[in-house]
Image (cartoon, rainbow, N blue to C red):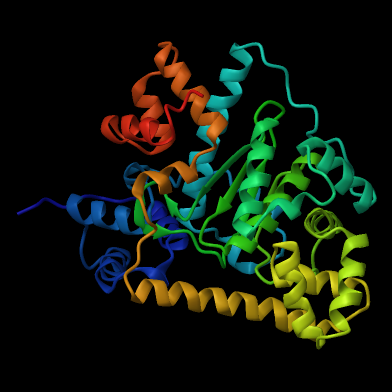
Length: 391
């Protein structure tokens, strides 16, 4: 028979407040209720189960007082939602993981004598979105019609991601916490976030979003980096309402890079002659290799459509994507090749520098495994999968 363990009442109250109770199994909720009521004391094994289910670190349960976690990033959320006043453990833990990646990159670049990047904080909220978007194209080495080289939105995402990474911003991406498939990241909680650093600014993309959503989020977050402000992008419907001025600017910049105004007006004029408004939106989304929501917003901002149609398009895009994910889940389809999936989560420049540092003996293998959520076997296979990792 296992002996019981004492948990501080303060810590237990904190656990209850920070656990996502509606997502926990009846067994886990039962444990917590019994502990709070004092009917039973927990065993170590039960605490381990609760820790795993809630994502709350095991060590927290044995503290005398609740831990003090830095949740200041919540202040930078796009939409002032009550849900994010109590962010999930999944979001908190992913932020913690990205802090470690960013810290390693920051220290590595300084040790190598690399200069800070020159674009963090170069713009202010008052900047014209057209001036801002052209500067981003210049920074990324893109022509105004760069999207013409893309066949799909995925092509466009890969082009933008590579360009942003190449100039020194880490672009990390995942739909789960670490390698734990039982801890998916909720797209309703956040789409992306960015963390400012003069040497290693970082963007994290929630890969549970649609390809079009990820593309827009990437440019939105890079705009925040150019403004020099952290961001937690949680606007699922891209409403453009009830958001701060800086968010409206970042949305406008992202939309302008994806769909330049002068080409949009020309394309709209042609499409509307042969199509109803809603169909014209989808025609332009195909032409510009982006989401219908971006086109609808452009059309609304230009006075070509009413807000109700824009809102309908935005919500329909979310519904269609949710339905697609549900069908894939029902068919039991996985994310494809494991190493391809893992490689897609990691910024290529970061991985190349990390592998090089390991090979030079400057970084421990154990640290590399921790930073990439791998082990000795999977790390070696990942290097092989991405072509040696040090190209």
